[in-house]
Length: 168
Image 1: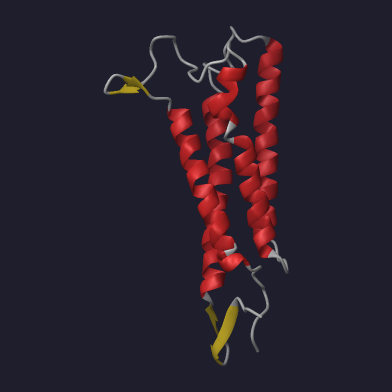
Image 2 (image 1 turned 180 degrees about the vertical axis):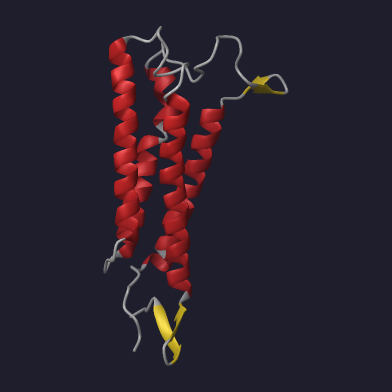
């Protein structure tokens, strides 16, 4: 049986390596969920997205609905990770699944819906590096998706569930 903390001397707790890994996983996934949701609001509730008068009113409705759903799902994921639980790794797993469910479609939606675009700005004004078009939203999503499996791995170090009991 693994312990998340042990008493090193009376009244002093020391976190085990496994507990440290879980805490780091929670911090990483909290960052991904909160920052991803906040950035989506800041960038999408703007004149080139939801406030764009050229957008159909129904498209703006669904864009706003998606933002509020993302915020609610993200906050739920954060709560699941940080609540007291005998299975704390489950909260990190749910947070990882939320990230994995939300970010990948950014990469393939324009292939499924050919009238969609990765770029919300003026056509022809896409940002680039060395003559190559670079979409900032895809870079951010890629980083979130690269960190997510690492956080999941940290939370399940060795494949065994973490425990929240304290040695006494």
